[in-house]
Length: 400
Ligand code: ADP
Ligand code: MG
Image (cartoon, rainbow, N blue to C red; front, side):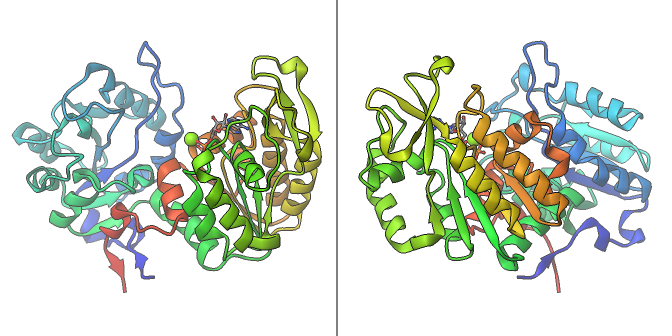
């Protein structure tokens, strides 16, 4: 696979005094008072912004926020993000209420080298999600070079991620995009072995393509989360009131038959009569799940054996929590995995976390900085692991 060009590949002449139009992923959570509750994605774009500003480009930022569906919605304005970004950069950040058109273009042309301007939410525009070529051309008029640093939006073929690159060249990856592709790409193409994948989460249906794609590549696949219960059912085990996808049991059977020893299901389970009865949580072997209770986490024996597998691996990819981590004590399995991965990183193992909830669990455990890489793009990393081409990446220039 050809490498995609990045901002490193741009010459001084391509940046100095030029307008760098940067698609970032500033789709951050805001509370009712429009305060940003998690600025991870904004901080993740800082290296690219700083680099371009230092190289003498004026930096024009594009992003989506929320799901305003093609028209302006006050609560989805990026204005609070511009203020927050200014604090993080310790320098002023301009904000344009119009995303495209004469006034927006005028602001981009008036922007001095090294300065930063954020344009209003791309999803306020009706042509964004339909990748309308007219809008794409209008977006392209906002810059002299296109940089895509929005890995989290790279699985969507929108005007600001794909269409714009058809009208504006060079079109290159930012540092965050580059890092995401490097880690995920190398893990899939040339993993250091043993290569272990840990998959969990609520639904097997959302992860089936990842399982199918990763199974032939990994040395071991460890399953957790509610999806374990669909496998249990396929194995003929009783699962009580656990979450299950009855229409996927056949598929789970097929996977068990083809995977053989590489696929590991939890040996034991943390169960309770309901999620709001944490005091009644107890561990049972997987063939003893009571008919009146549900599995909410992997059990302690499983957590230990998964931790051992992680300790001897050289590459670990984790997607999907092991249990209902939002609700202690059912976070124990997920925390055990996060800790085992953090320890493995210290011993030189490449540890990669993909998936929005898994990343949140790692952050909650305070272990983010102890992973080799925590992907900022839940859906995008999942599609990448499924082996799909991300349209936002495909649209960028190749390096020959
Ligand atoms: P990610 O965002 O990391 O890809 P998913 O969205 O697939 O992860 O799954 C996360 C959700 O799965 C969490 O909300 C968690 O509560 C839920 N979950 C995990 N294990 C169970 C379980 N045993 N029963 C019910 N829900 C579960
Ligand atoms: Mg999720």
